[in-house]
Length: 165
Image (tube, rainbow, N blue to C red):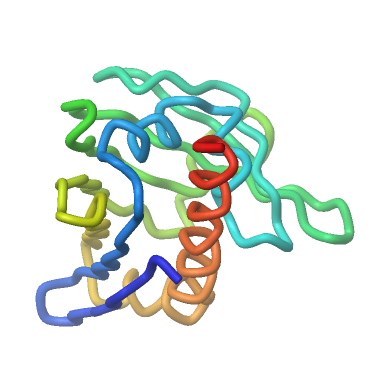
């Protein structure tokens, strides 16, 4: 299981997830840079992702949706801010109303900072989500973001192993 630590801090308005992968930083970076690989691990296994637009470049918008077991779609977007591949990237993450990817003003947006650092055994990934208010953070915690993100991240090992063979 790659996820090694999960911390949420209502005072700092952050959720931080740490994961360790048995692969070099460049290989972990490929998972996020390639939308077809990212589809295999983004979202919990019960809600596979489909990336419509994806380019990790400042000023770009990544759009995707998760599909429920019943076939419903949940739409979302990333507004890419900085990219320092293979070491990490930052983006604004939000929920969308529908397939037009118009931001849903009733749902919280977050600021995301993903970083990838080499370790003796591979890569330590740190995912920091920052929210504007404690209520916004509480909303996503109640929605199951910790469980969903952890189950998604825990899929990455299988993808890394399949590509290494």
